[in-house]
Image (cartoon, rainbow, N blue to C red; front, side):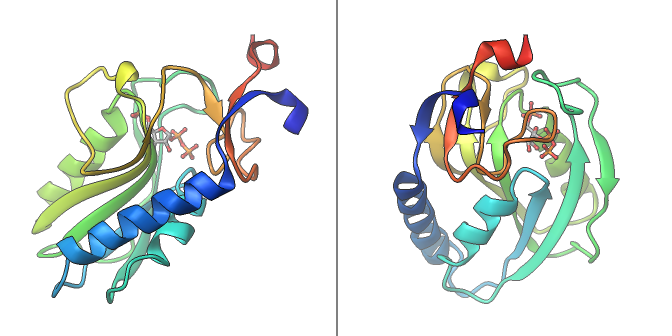
Length: 178
Ligand code: PRP
């Protein structure tokens, strides 16, 4: 699996540092509140596990599953709600945890959904921010790393369902998917 990677962008140590940095900021920003942490499956599963352990607050942890890439390398423009959140978000301070914001369409879909359901506030902590991929104007509130416009895998991010278990993030060799 490691042989399929062209270049490592963020290693385990850098990822840990990002989780600590964001966890401390989120702890300060949400002091006195009990946020509902909403992890977006599947991609955010590792980032969620690492980030929540650096947040020193009472939190509720929920999951939602949406799909936009359908296993490929580009977003399909069509967001599907695959598995809905299992609790009421009305009146809650929701902190969405994403692995990557690329076109921004998934985030737009989620924010609209949560606002429509009466969330008190909706903020986003993304592991990666690929600003060069944006199709709509939307920004994350907390960003682990900015990433250039390359197809990256690992640490939750997949190609055709694979590579999610790589402990680092890297650029996938082009011959793997072309
Ligand atoms: C990925 C990622 C984000 C979304 C970002 O999910 O986890 O949710 O795409 O892309 P966007 O900003 O262009 O909308 P994907 O649909 O690949 O599902 P997965 O997390 O199950 O891999």
